[in-house]
Length: 399
Image (cartoon, rainbow, N blue to C red; front, side):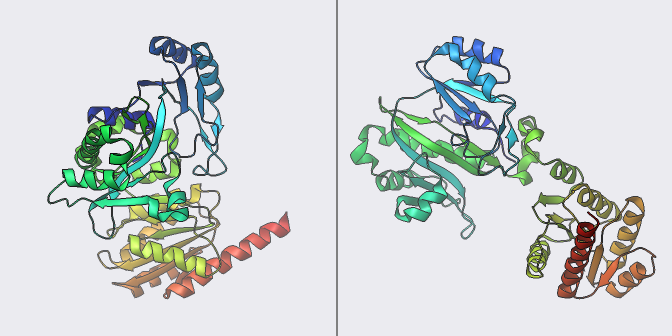
């Protein structure tokens, strides 16, 4: 689960990580009142959406004049902000963060995430703060430093010193060495205690008066650990999530919307990834990742159908099931019942393999429904791509 910058900074403050004084704002009038109370030398008005690149897209405004803050807030609120992470549709700005500016002497990059190879938390740091870390890694990989932390031992002072010396802080800013090492320890505590999957500060600035401040903040929380933190539910902003993904979550389905035209319904994340690959190999593009789980039921299959059919980009549906935990004839019954419940007017191809696959295929073939049945993955992918292509040609001819 992603949260807004102002929420990330609230967490930072709880763990002793310095942040600018700021407040979430939803109206120009509230911005005016807060700016008067803030009484800063520089005011920063930042759009709050779940996407990076807000500054380049015009979503961050600065002014030294308190009286200009309401107008800047009015300019941003309700605006559709398009960044490299939002896609062409952009995101509507419904919230702002109005905070004090900082006298920046130096900008650093700092993040903490889980290294997939080792399974350990790893700090990533760079002297190139304020830039996209992917861009830095591509152009100057030697400027990206990594410091793994053994979870059996936890964060130690030497982890902080390794990064500090790697960044050249003792030579450049020796007075902040101790506070930098302490900040990393606090960041590690936040990461572990709140079950985060990513914590990022970009930039972490060193001010002219030799202080560290998290000028920006991003925190992603592990969905699988949200049950441990009921207070996080209030941080969820449904406006920032795809409606179909919200519906999938409510039905305990793993769903991610993509840009293709073939809807996928699969049991198992690995098989779902392979299914998307084979659709692409067959000449088309998947419209989604949808994992109904190893114990798929009639109800989950029906919910999956409804979600796929609500996506206007979906021109065909590919159901790929391997019967291991669940038997294939039960999936077939689920598909048949779901097809009767929802109005399916697009091609559907079902591929069943595993326990009782023959019985499942027979049920589908004798159901009277317009459902193509396949046994081989490649055969099934070619079928749905061909059927979808024919349907598109007919639609083009009719228009």
